[in-house]
Structures are given as structure tokens and as C-alpha cells.
Image (cartoon, rainbow, N blue to C red):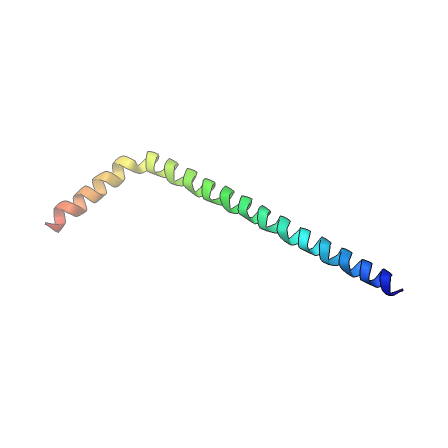
Length: 65
């Protein structure tokens, strides 16, 4: 009976370790997708509003003198 308990406990720890290691990989992929999405939004925003932002910063720089 003790061998059965030990075998089940070992199986539970093994499964637990595998699940934890897979979660780390999944979270890394999720972070990579999040960074890629934010980068894409920034590139699109800069492309769309680049001229207006440049004019805004130029006017701030000129009025600061």
C-alpha cells in the first residue's frame, strides 16, 4: 500500500512540475505577443500623426526660447 501511495505522490509531483514549466513558456509567448501588439500600435500612431507631432514639438521648442 505504501508503494502505491509513493507512486501516486511521485506522479502528482511530476505532473505538477510539467504544468508549471509549460505555464512559463506560455507566459513568455503571451508577453512577446503583447510587446508586438504595442509596437505595432506605436508604429501606426507615429505614421498617422508623425507630421502633427513634429509640428507640435517644433512649436514647443520655439516658444521655449
